[in-house]
Image (cartoon, rainbow, N blue to C red; front, side):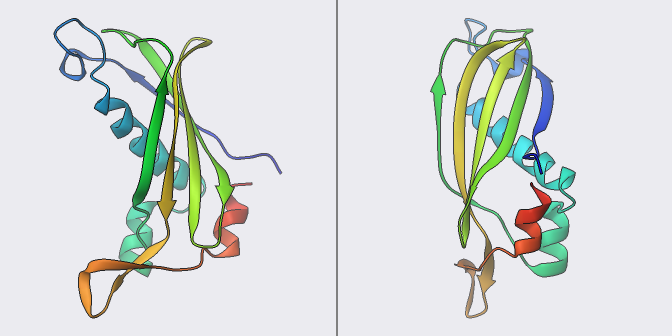
Length: 138
């Protein structure tokens, strides 16, 4: 089975740029997050349902990006995202932002599969990721 890939088109708007018209870098991390959520929806596991039905959250525990060239005001990009690695309680999502065929940046997020701690709901505890979830991503 092929690896499931989410392709999220987006345009770089003025509010996402610095005064020079270049994408303000933290916005790419917001787009990473949005594409990961869409990827889970595509796999049949919408994060809002995981939270509401199972109390499962998928927070980011580490993220980084490698910027190849700037994205500019008005650019139409596509964020490609897929789960590159499954671990027992964590998973790695890789992202690539493309302007046509040109790579703008690549990055990754390490996410955890967690529930809230009953004794302190402000804290979380990792849980094993079900095999069915992993299989849904190919």
